[in-house]
Length: 84
Length: 145
Image (tube, rainbow over all chains, first blue to last red; front, top):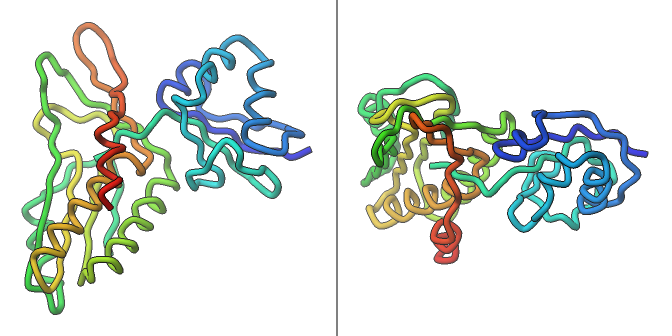
């Protein structure tokens, strides 16, 4: 098991209703973590309904859903960024 | 390189003068200031960000720009929080020996800030608040680099 800080931003945060939480997971990848989260409650399933609409950062660097979680401390989920 | 992410207002003119004065060997300084545009009925633009990642993501872009365009310096200021129509959101300034590199570096930084720096905008109007969607044009803009 791996204990992660999982962060949510923008409408992902609103749908899940939390800015961050600590998650114990046995998932090997980000995609595996998402698969675990969506089984929790409908609000997670709603937030992760279309992962193509989401972006991921692993330890504060942009990553793909296939990114491994070994040694990772922090995973963030958010919509495409709108800076500038 | 000077990267600043904060909620308070900044004076783009004063920042540009200070940045220009600090350059060694520059022949060109280019700056861009983004302001809150009111498409009609906008009460505020709220900007959420990812503390920690924001600074490191922008710093990485600035390092890349500095090396690629031979900059003598780069400045990025980006606000978060609730901003009023007409307020300055952010500014970029770049300095290089020649103008083509300074212009290109400013455009490069803007394109990357738009879709690779962890900020999210929400428009607040009398009828509610709406997250601003990223556009495919934002993503396509990166292809030219």
